[in-house]
Length: 263
Image 1 (spheres, rainbow, N blue to C red):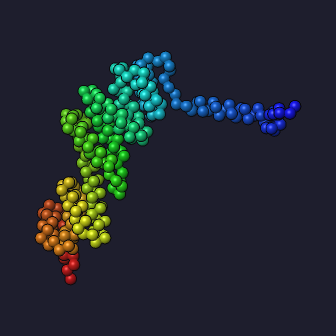
Image 2: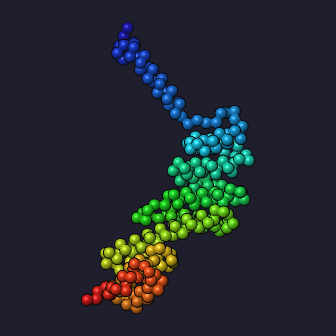
Image 3: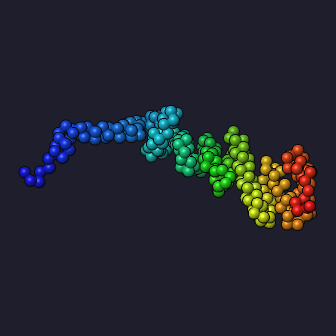
């Protein structure tokens, strides 16, 4: 009969049609089986929290995220709400979703400042940005954000056991920013743009005093001052290097080298 589609002939016979249907069914089953699980619909709030926390402990962060979000949506005022949001943020952080983690950490820290978990949350914001901090060749916005958020923890929760860790991150982040400024100063110096180089090198000394790169900064600043004819400033920098870092490689070289441009 015209207009009737013969599926058997189109797919090469009934056996191939049946095989095709089995493949489609298998794919559907696999897709369903791979879908992230959720707590049972009739779970109590505590059971939903425990289910999600178990997934978090097992490293199943995708399932934990779905469970914690469902728990917060259903029972935002439950006694486990603060812990739920903290673990939700930690799940995002562990799964390399740092900005989502920072948002959840910040929400808990700002909306529940008196919570026992408030300092953990504020430190979580700090950690999230620090994880995003790139190498010194790239823009350091996230490094500056790290310092800001860690400083907020130290200022708002000075007695927190996390404060020393926050200070350690601040120190490390400042070292990175100092190295970044030195890198830019060195770049200008290598192109004979000495005055631009001086601006960045002086910025390191002013903004990051005592950084590990300071001996190198002073040595390069001495050369830059010398090349532009600022002999008094160059001598002051030389004396500072020799007095503050007498055992440094730069100080050793300074004592045996002549000023740049001398013959």
